[in-house]
Image 1 (cartoon, rainbow, N blue to C red):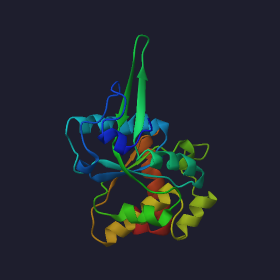
Image 2: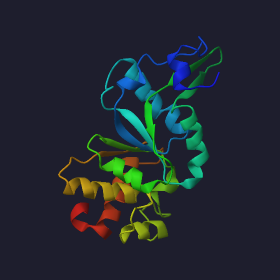
Image 3: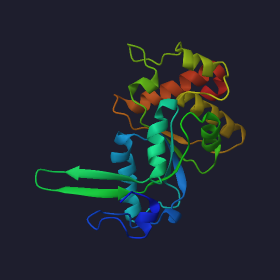
Image 4: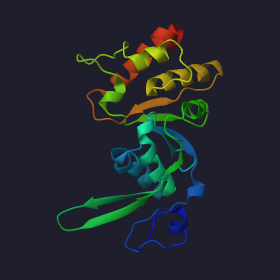
Length: 216
């Protein structure tokens, strides 16, 4: 049986599966996540699923998936064909448990930079979360943000639309500030040391080149 929203809602999935107690229609988006790979879906998306199972934060914490690399196309198409649903399998020495998670509510096609920027500017996006691997932070060997990277330089001089995660974040924060909208929280979920500091430094360093008042 193919995993789809129709199969889930009609009860046609295997009875051994643990399925959502919440309906897709009850979820509203509020988190835009870059990098919807296995790590994200087995952790971040799973945590939100458990929250929704308790009927908490249904009105704002649904995930909008996004990516900046065209190479992610096949992966995104797979998720699209499953109506953004995933199955997480947990195994121990004596048992296994398969859970269908439905915390993702929308998916923006990879490298659709204009649409990603449009979503980031929307008031309902409160958190921008990241699992983009260490390479997505453009770090030098000393751990600093590498402002000289060609992709970053292109975003820094005003390339529109931006084509890196941090270029999109800075452009969206600038637009939200001009529209007097509250900023979103940038939340790194990557397993790199001091990931919050690394994310802050990348955002502010890029902003300092293109818009110093925004960086401040």
